[in-house]
Amino acid sequence: MRRLRSEIAARTGREHRMTIDRSTPRPPRWAELLLVLLLAPRDRESVSGDLLEEYRESIVPALGRGANRWYVRQVNRHVLRQTWMWSALVAATLVTRHLFDSLLPIHYTPHVVVFRSVIMSWALIGTFAVGAAWQAWRTEHLRTGVILSIVTALIGGVLAAAGTAVCLAIWHDPATMRAIQGSGGLDEALWGVPLLLTPIGIIAGVQGAAVGRVGAAIYGWSRPNTKSA
Image (cartoon, rainbow, N blue to C red; front, side):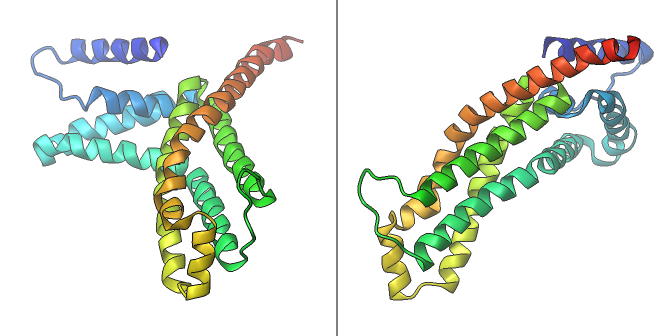
């Protein structure tokens, strides 16, 4: 993170020296930093630089104060591109579990974990961990993997609640509603489990990101040795 900030500060200094006699418009620093964090090293200069150039030369003259909102929307779109697949997997896992509990109900015994619960839990943990590891690998920063996990949990939770609501609109006969009540109730399906995704995502994301970051470091360290061999 310190290195990224120094890169942005250095680039800001160069641009400031090039524009001595006029103020240089700048997007929100947090959005610019988030974009740089989520980009692979080979894309940081080109993607962030092109977006900044468009912001200054086209968007600021056209939108004025609305240029910052435009820039934030572009960053949000990039975040969605990085997280949509993992969010969809999380939502699909929860909606599938809801369908099994409502259409193929089983008898739940208190304090006994059933096999489908184990499968769902490990599927969620694996999704968060693998997504965070992939992001930390490609960006070479641990915290970007954790960021991806948090965003995945938030979007996945919203998608899961929406998917569950659609299922309820289709299957809401008395037998199905009794099955849902027996498996935890509507509150658990619509918001209880989705709210638990964030802490699960953080814990699994930290571990996955650590693995991805270590793997990226080992790979980066071995490449020069391979070339010189």
